[in-house]
Length: 197
Image (tube, rainbow, N blue to C red; front, side, top):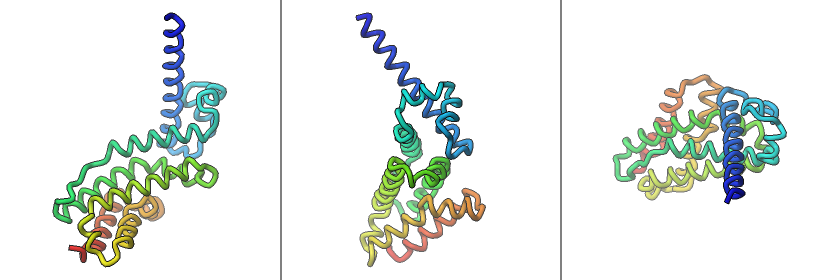
């Protein structure tokens, strides 16, 4: 019995250590340190580099846990949009929610761009995120996509208009505010869906 309690205690401590390391990694990304070293992450978490490696083994394992954090964070901002609403209402709600979510994941997306070439975990995360957005678009705008002359192309265009890539061009490269980016997204959706009533 005593051994079981000790084991449980060690497991809980290990879980807390892993969580503190992930939290530190996320915090660094949010603060703009987009490619932190293991040493920097360990220092931010208040642990040794050795402890970090004992907790995760390698950076890919840490990336996987950090990616999981961002997906949970993103899911928390999701809203259910009734496909029966008027098109204008659906566009407004979708674009507002998408703007909040893109603002939230911006640090992770910027960091991933720097490291995707050498990280299968980050490449997989990007593909999963793209697929999630595509599924959401297909559900919210199902009626319009169904009557489109080119449903796949329409879905692709809506995905492109609401993608991180488009948001980054407007926000990071052109210096547009989040509100201006959202307005541009809404205008693109309105134009793309106008003929599908």
